[in-house]
Amino acid sequence: MPDTRTHRGPGPQDPYWFGNEARGKLRQAVADLSWLLSRGYAGASALKLVGDRYRLVERQRVGVLRSACSDEALRERIARRIDTLSGQCLRIDGFNLILTLESALGGGVVVGGRDGCFRDLAGVHGTYRRVEETRPALELASRWLEEWAVGPCAWLLDAPVSNSGRLASMIRETNPTWTADVVADPDAVLMMPGDPVVTADARILNHCGAWVNLARRLVETAVPEAFVADLA
Image (tube, rainbow, N blue to C red; front, side, top):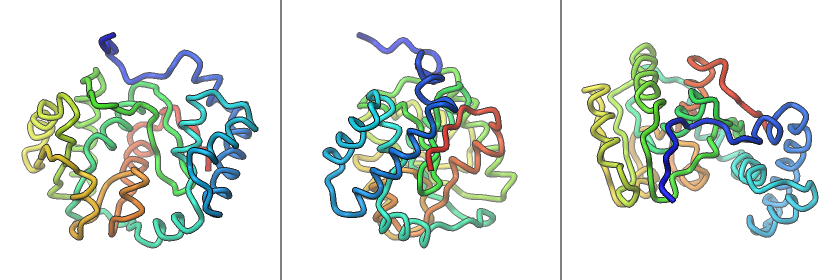
């Protein structure tokens, strides 16, 4: 069935699944899952154990998984995070940032993780479809990165994801000082030594050098009305 969505908005049950009444349970689930991960439990089996205990639906489990991390991962991520943006040249995990900004602008759920990162629940699953929030998300990023004297910025997009070339063109049109390249494996490039990385992807964060928590900074600054479920 083709994806006909025009917004990166919330699911029908998200106000209930991630609303104020559900967050206490979700935060405890994140704490429990992080405890298990810290003791070497495999992610899939640990998530099933925690999800079953708290009777979480699949979408809640995704949010909990994206919010949890082991104690070791948390320490290492915090140690490598930089908070000074002015004068930085950044390498941006393109889909990771744009999907979070689209979700925030469209009223979709953005979860706050244990490591302080904001993450969406959208995912691309091999296909990316432009929505009405795409252009505003890029313009928002351009406006505030210029305000903070950040740049130049190099965006990296996944070649296997459909429409990545079109998004790269839109990125370059939005800000001529940006580069946007479609590569086979952005994760591998972002984990190489170089300029600070913008991502909330756990695998990249566990292996990259310096990184910037840009999605959270942009959402809190420019989209204060966003549907943020802080599960830390």
